[in-house]
Length: 290
Ligand SMILES: CC/C=C\C=C\CC(=O)SCCNC(=O)CCNC(=O)[C@H](O)C(C)(C)COP(=O)(O)OP(=O)(O)OC[C@H]1O[C@@H](n2cnc3c(N)ncnc32)[C@H](O)[C@@H]1OP(=O)(O)O
Image (cartoon, rainbow, N blue to C red; front, side, top):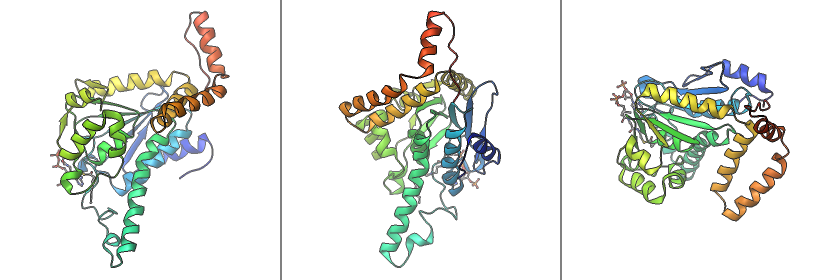
């Protein structure tokens, strides 16, 4: 992974990716799009995907022109889950079937932790990440969107946690994140039955916050929402993501303490003064750059 300043990160982004396409579709919007780009394999998550998702997220974290990120996918489906049968799949690689059970277990454990970290990188990116899901979103694809901050989909989208039918326990975050998104009952329903749900049902249980009529409308709608977010105070947006995520994992009392400490620093921001001034002057605020 690259280290250094914003221009290093931009240059590194331009060097490109194999399993992803990272672009800034509208130069007038501080929004980047990370597109899963293995359509022939239905965007099954390969070792390249697991290496590149955290790399892209870490770089976008540092790029000032990325104030919101859209996670989308090329081809007919969003994601077919973990790549099955690929030579580089660490879950089925020979080391996990070695003679020494302890060494094999440790190898598998490290592989799983690495893949988990790749998806947690979406949360670690300080910028909001919005999933735009169309077509099928299977297994690891659900783990991936569960790590995003907001999920939208098109009417043709379906979601399925297929792991239970593959004879495994889902281990890339869905069992931890989904109950906090859709509630324990809905998460247990999805995880234990392995049933595929439609976009309408995903909306009803809160897995997605909005369903668009078509992929085209999804893309346009998400681009508009991402642009709107990108025009808000970056400190306020990044702070809101950080506080929401922290509050998710601690008690209400601890969360209130955390946000009080956060805002004791952030309430001194130029952006707040500008927001108040703009309100008084009846104009749109102009917030500071990152
Ligand atoms: C050891 C691993 C342990 C556990 C992993 C758990 C986490 C998970 O992600 S569980 C879910 C795993 N995924 C699947 O079960 C596969 C899901 N795929 C599908 O259901 C369908 O492919 C589809 C996404 C609904 C798309 O259907 P369709 O448009 O009809 O395309 P296909 O003809 O089925 O596929 C086209 C092409 O893509 C290849 N492919 C699809 N999914 C995967 C995958 N997960 N891994 C590798 N390759 C995949 C499929 O084989 C086809 O390849 P061809 O070479 O063109 O035949």
